[in-house]
Amino acid sequence: MKFSCEKALLQNAILTASRAVSPKSTIPALEGLLLEAEDSGTVFLTGYNQETGIRSAIQADVTEAGSMVLSARLFGEIVRKMPDDTLLFQEEALKVHIACGMSEFDLMGIDPEDFPELPTVEYQNSLSIPEQTLRAMIGQTLFAVSDDESRPVHTGSLFVVDEEGLTMVAVDGFRLALRREPVAEKNGTFEFVVPGASLSEVEKICRETDELVGIHQGARHILFKIGSTILISRRLEGEFLSWRQAIPRNNPIKVTANTKQLLACIDRVSLIVSEKLKSPLRCVIGEGEIDMTTKTALGNAHDCCPVEGNGNGLEIGFNNKYMMDALKAAPKDQVTLELSSPITPCIIVPAEGEENFLFMVLPVRLKADF
Image (tube, rainbow, N blue to C red; front, side, top):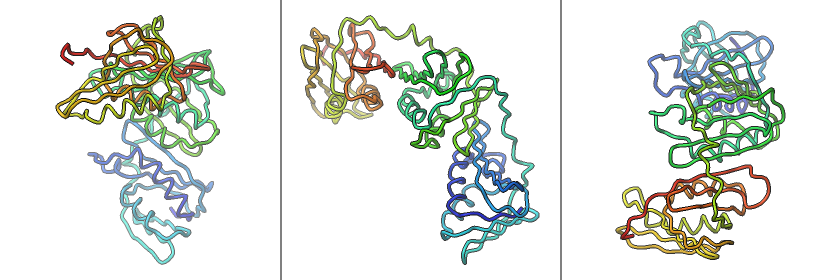
C-alpha cells in the first residue's frame, strides 16, 4: 500500500474514525484503525468497538492499493505532530514508513485480517435531515438518556418517523426530553432506538451545515451517512416507554417565563447544593412570580423569578440539576411551565410558535420542616 495526501485531511479522518476505537480490547486490532487504500484514489479509515463503527473517507494519490491496521493512538499522535505538508504513507509486509517534510517514522502494523468486518445494514427504511438540525435535536435530548443498564432500551433515544416528521425521545425515569422536526425525505412510518453513546458521536461528527444526513434503518443496525463519513450502530431492542401516555397535558396551571432569567435564578439558589449536600429546589408559584428556596448545611438561598400567569400558590419541589438541564436545552427565549399538583410532573414547552420541544421533569417530595 502506498499513498500520499495532505496532512490535515488525514488528521481529520483519524480524529473522526478514532471515536469508535476501543481504548482497551482483548483483540489488539480493535485498538487500531483499519486503513484501506483503493485504486480509485480513496483511502478509508475505520474504527470499530463492536458496538459502533465509524468509517471516514479521504481523497489521496494512491499508487498502490492495500490495507492494514495501525495503533490509533500512536498513528494519531504521529500525524498530529507532523509538519503541515504532504504526507507519504508506504507499507510493505506490515512494515510502515510515514514521511512528511523532514520527519520520518517506521512502524509495525497489524494484519487487516484480524480486524472484524463492520456489520452490513440491510436498508429497510430511511430518512434525510440537515446536519445542524440533527445535531441540535441530539444535543437537546441526550441529557435525558438513562445510564441504568437494568433497562437497556432507555440507554438510548427513540426515533419516531411519521407524518409529523422526526420525533426524538429520551427518558431516564425522572425526566423526559422530546424534540420534533420535519424531515426532508422519508419512506413510510417507522421507529427505532439508538444507543446514547452512538448519538454522542453522531453529534460530534455533524457540522453546522444544511447538508443532509442519511439515516438508514436495518434489521439490527442503524447507519448514519454524514458527508464522507458513515457511522454504524447497533439498535437497542425492548419496549420503550409509552411516552405519549406518560405526558400529562391537561394541566390547569400555566406560567410563562424568560428561559435565561429562570435558569439564572435556579443557578443562583443552587450554589449551596452539591453532590454531598443535596437539597430539593422548593418552588412556590404565585401570581407573577416563582419564589425559589434551597437549604443545606451551608445555609439557605432564596431568589424570585418574574413570570406571566398565576400558580395559585402551588408549592412543589424539583431536582435543581434536572430543571437546569431542561432549560439549557430549550431552544426558545420564552417557555411555558405547565403544572397541576405537587406530585405531578412539570411540563416545559415553547411559549409561542410550533411545539417542537417538550421537557418533562418529575417533582420530588418536600420535607415538612423544609
